[in-house]
Length: 328
Image (cartoon, rainbow, N blue to C red; front, side):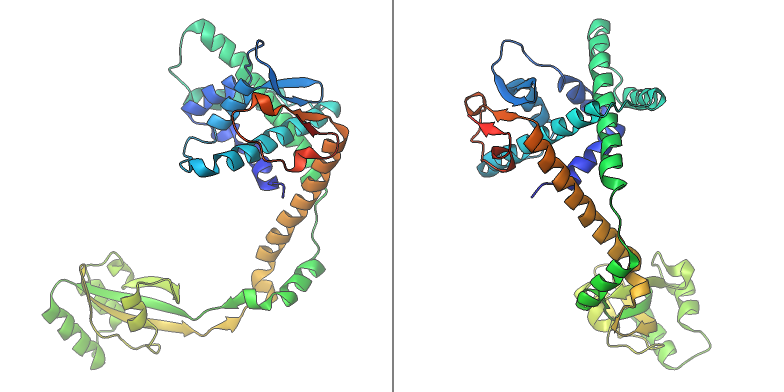
């Protein structure tokens, strides 16, 4: 399956680039003419050095060599897809906004200070600007051909909700407060006061005695579902009724007393509660479908040739072995 989300993420690559990424992006546009082409995409050749720079920027944290062939194969597919999108963007005459290019260049320079000599910096700036412009061309094309064409209706969202009711069940929720002290004797006295229903309620005692970070808020910790608290806390909390206090729970942090302010039983969430989540999920799926069709069309119209002998890994044939593409 095409990793459309990975391609869409390309749109923010330059805007989030760190100081090391500046050089990686610039070097991505250099190649050695004496090399044999590793990939031909349309009328343009790309070399092993181009692929290495593309791979290196994405494999810095890779630590599983047994999967390297598959990972590099996937990255090569992504490299080809990005170039296909760029070809289409240029065919459509898309040009980046000069002001946007200038702003992105300034942001990248701010994070890439302290590079080498003036001539080298000049060369890198030309290459970097080309990378920025290409990125913006693809971003605009993706927006026009994917985002603008994707839509999801409320009826589709409601149909999905009815077919996946089990995915939208809210677990038990409790609103929890805590008193945390260092001394067991103090904890026992506080618990006795709570059970006696003295004039001091839980929040008052928490403000006076608790050493926890929530003391100023009357000990209020927030709302929790099952599975969100440590086991020893969950056992103490979820057996309580609203207004009740737990037994003392001892941990390395001290002695805890918990109080439950409110309990919301497990229930089926209403459609209105989850509408936005469902719409976002369906919209992402719709965008992926459109991206798949778009790339399939590009692969059939733009020749792609992969030269195995110029690769340093075993390319595992996938989506670029059909259409107008070939592997040699």
